Every structure is written in structure tokens, then in C-alpha cells.
Length: 248
Ligand code: ADE
Image (cartoon, rainbow, N blue to C red; front, side, top):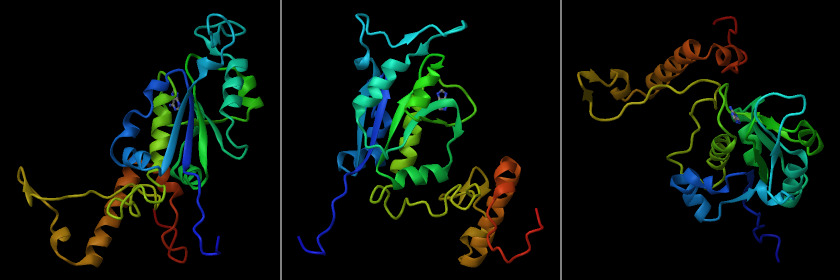
């Protein structure tokens, strides 16, 4: 080998622990993510948690200690499934859960920059707290609503990571100006026809004046963010730290 020989990196790998492995790859087998998966730019493994059950009935859940509705995923079964997955110790271990920290584009970027993630999909009322602690699971939520299980949340998280991997998005699709990359929501887009049901494309966008177009887009993005996401607006990074920061 010479110094200039390219180094081979194992592709970014999502290892998913679930009671419904047949859900995967699902939509991730299509379009951008699907082409990249087929091309070996990332890898996906969905493992059935039930394979780690030890009793005759292959049970994975039990009634909550202290009483209450629903069933709880057993600590011993889930721990065995995590250990059997044998991911490297530095690979983040995530548990999709509505009580997790909200997923952000910043966390997605960190995950995509690593070697992959082990993703546990919760079901039932929850997961025994002891396995969350003993296997150092990072609880992640994709929004303030409750899904029937973590699988759809895991698909969303993987999709967000995979599109950032090198070679997955073409230049055309790459999102340097997309929502959240500048802490703002995306400005409105238009394409032909020039007039749709009596609504013309805003004149400035067809003026050919690139500076005016950029200023219009910035103003639209700011107005949308203020109106829809005051939380993002408050936390937005200053476009120029030396400029007046008192407005807004
Ligand atoms: N499982 C159920 N609801 C969820 C949510 N909102 N985010 C992540 N995982 C979940």
C-alpha cells in the first residue's frame, strides 16, 4: 500500500432492534435512500427483539411493576438483544421514545458524521428503566405526539441521517439553503407555469436580479420563522455577529 491509497471506510450502518423487522427498509428502500442502500453507501440491519426471548412463549413484555395499564418491554430481553447486536462501543445507542430529547438537525448531523447508530424501537407502555440505564440508551423523540411504536420514528431518524452521507444527495438536491441549516424555515418556492389559477410567480423571482432575489428569500424565511416557530426565531444564529442584534 502507498500513502496515496484510498482508505476504505465501512459504510454508515443503522442497526435497528424492533418487534417488527419487516417494517424495514420500507420507504428507505426507495428513492435517494434506497439507491444509496443498494449502492452500499449505507447499511441497514433490522433485528427482531423477540429472538432474544428465552421462555417457551418467546415473551418480550410483562405487566408494569406498581400496576397500571399496558405492558412494559423486559430489561433482560432487550439487554440480550442489544448485546447480541454487538455494535462497537462508540456507536450511539438510541431509544425512540416520546419522552426523549427532541431530535434536531444538529444531532442528525453528529449521527451522520459517525459510523452509524443502534436504534431501539419501543412498543407497549414503555421500556424497563433499568435497561435504559444499564445499556446507556439515549432517548430520542421526533415530536410531541405519541406513535404506536418507535419504528416510524426510527425511519424518520435514519432518513434524516442518510441524506447527509457523502454521495447520497446529488448537488441538485443538496440542501445548503434548506430549513434549519441557517436556523430559519425555508422560503417559498415557485416553478412554471408563470400563472397558476390567477396567481403569478412573485415578480422579483423572475427579475434576474440575484441580490434582490436573495434579500426577498431571506425576508420571507424570517417572516415564516417568526410566525410559525417563535422558538426557532429566538434562538436563531445571528447572520452577522457585528450587526445590530437588538431587532426582532
Ligand atoms: N415512539 C412513540 N412516539 C414517539 C415519538 N414521538 N418519538 C419517538 N419515538 C416514539
